[in-house]
Image (cartoon, rainbow, N blue to C red; front, side):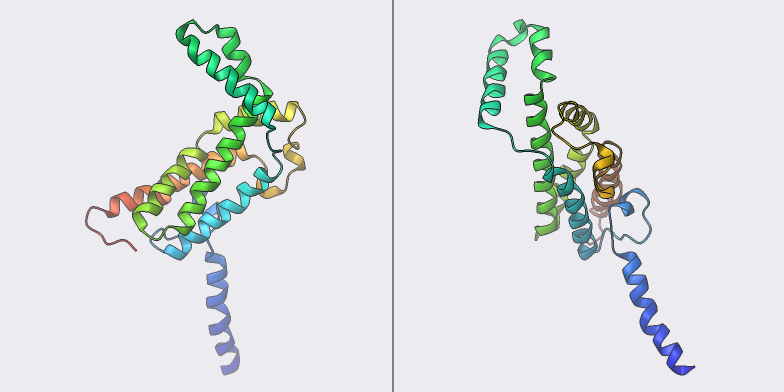
Amino acid sequence: MKGLVGLLCWVLPLTVLGAAAPSAWDLVHPQNFDWRDRGARTQMANDLLGRIQILAAVIPPMSADDLETVRREQATLDAMGDDAPPERLGSLYLSRRYQHQVLLELLDGTLGSLSCAARAERVAVEMACWAKVSASLLEEQKLDLALNVLRQKRMVPRDEDMPVQAQDPVVWYGEYGRGVLNQIVIPYLQSLQGQEVP
């Protein structure tokens, strides 16, 4: 009996610790996530990185010709200013090339900000990175349009053909973005009213 009690005392903390390992789900339904724990924040950043990298990995690189075409058209329309024809602006905005660029930039920016949050040595720098993560993840409409255009062109797998962790990004990225804001960034800012931060 004494051996069983000892075993339980050893196993239960491990179970609790295992269950408490932060994941993106804790941003939606927080349970054991403590924003003040630097290790927990790093685990959160790494979990989000893994999820977004799954989607980023299936987006093909943009060809130099496509990139040059988009940049040239943008420069032309910018030069026209208010005289730019709305139909030409719309044609660029809804084009495969333009939306491909938008999606790559959005995912690259999000991944870069998450890497910054995971590596930052100063909490103020880290929190600035988390704020950028939140802003990127909350670009749901931009993400939705880009994915729809690229899926129509069969450049990106259908949502149901993606691993579970990468499905419904238009739904979950926004939830994660709000979670980062409410569970990490805002509590940190509130702590600056006199509380010490890690």
